[in-house]
Amino acid sequence: TLILGLESSCDETAAALVTDGREILAHRLAGQEAEHTPYGGVVPEIAARAHVEALTPLVEAALADAGKTLADVDAIAATAGPGLIGGVMVGLVTAKALALAADKPLIAVNHLEGHALSPRLASPDLDFPYLLLLVSGGHCQLLLVESVGRYRRLATTIDDAAGEAFDKTAKLLGLGFPGGPAVERAARKGDPKAVPLPRPLVGTPDPHFSFAGLKSAVGRARDAGRWSNEDIAASFQQAVVDCLVDRTKRALDKADGATALVVAGGVAANGAIRAALQTLAAEHGLPFVAPPLWLCTDNAAMIAWAGAERFASGLTDPLDTPARARWPLDPGAAPARGAGV
Ligand code: ATP
Ligand code: MG
Ligand code: FE
View 1 (spheres, protein in one colour):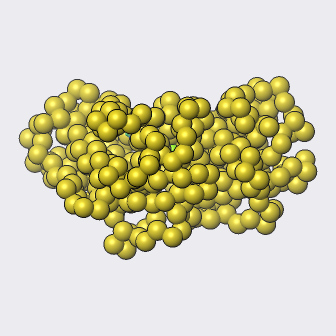
View 2 (cartoon, helix red, strand yellow):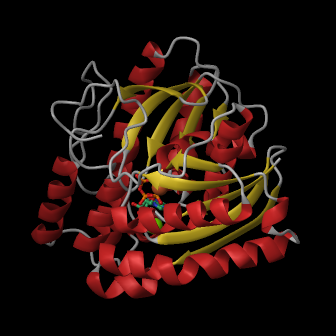
View 3 (cartoon, rainbow, N blue to C red):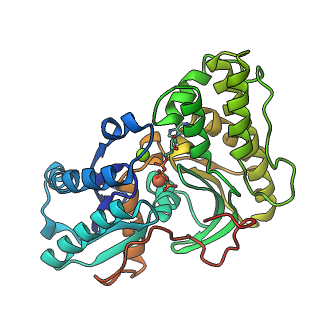
């Protein structure tokens, strides 16, 4: 089975061809850093326009890379949400047009499901159920991944996402955009113990997250003028690591039957976070699984793979499936003290 996957929910436009046998025949990606850098963040209208321009050439390039035509594809998967609605609509409408033209089924993929299943693309031995720490630009959640389409949310953030905290810290320190890799680079040259910073919610019984207070503390540390950017970045990253490890440890106690500890999403590309979770998994006698770095940040291979997993379960979607700005993976989960999904 061959799946074409499209991704356009934020500021990466991407197309990929992936088989149900985990072969990545092609994956193409166009970032939009140059367009958004002057504004210090992603501008939705600019993103949507850039997706329009980039997507069709990327699909053609991916097909050419793989030596395939649309006729060889078994289904077309696209991110249908959550994300910036203009961008999501561009990808979904493109997928619908291709599906209609080539008479192929459409698979509407939840972007978070793409992240959640991406570890299974790179690690064939990873079986359900597993405990997933999903850490990205817009989300910070602990999920028990029970099977394709069954995600039980154990915890979420009550304010900012982890990636958002990295991005805001980078902005406060003038390290540039996107913030995560810039903070990680600066942190390598700093002392993680230099700046006293809070560990919000650490020690509380429910494994929820909070990062807004940490970001404010970073702002105060910068204004104090006592520490280098490197020391602030290293201390911030250590605080995030401590929060993620403490919260994940709590969730492990609740996640009966989990066969592995898994991390996914853009923030999972962070070396310090990966190393700390690896240690935590070992302490619990569990295998630790993290996708390769390029599969952590947004890409279309994970969307094609989620499409392949859904297709194998007989799940396809009608052509009038709507694009959704918000789309929780676990619709039954209660919000954490009024926070969003
Ligand atoms: P979501 O998946 O929640 O819709 P998104 O798609 O915008 O959000 P991703 O592409 O999954 O998010 O991840 C991007 C985030 O990952 C950004 O916040 C970025 O700063 C962060 N990130 C990327 N690399 C690193 C890194 N090495 N260390 C820390 N954070 C990182
Ligand atoms: Mg991005
Ligand atoms: Fe993402």
